Image 1 (cartoon, rainbow, N blue to C red):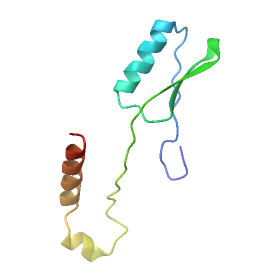
Image 2 (image 1 turned 90 degrees about the vertical axis):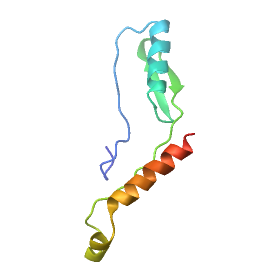
Image 3 (image 1 turned 60 degrees about the vertical axis):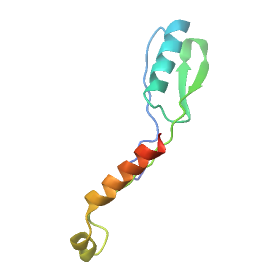
Image 4 (image 1 turned 180 degrees about the vertical axis):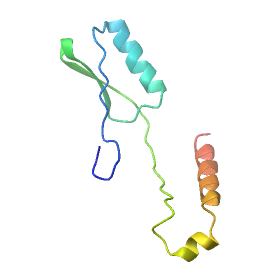
Length: 92
């Protein structure tokens, strides 16, 4: 974890991977929106396989850092709903 609480990396260990299993694991993780820079390390072969093509965006609506009138006069649900609409439009 980074100092700000964001995940920086995650390790998953799977013992005794065949070449078919390596392809299946990396392919499955790629279809699960694995981020760019993801690698599968096959330790018994000392090789890394790059996969993952997705990027992410974090939007923090924490409700504490702005002046009180912003939270009184603005609806964070409106911001969220518009962000979701933009995301859906971007993917099409």
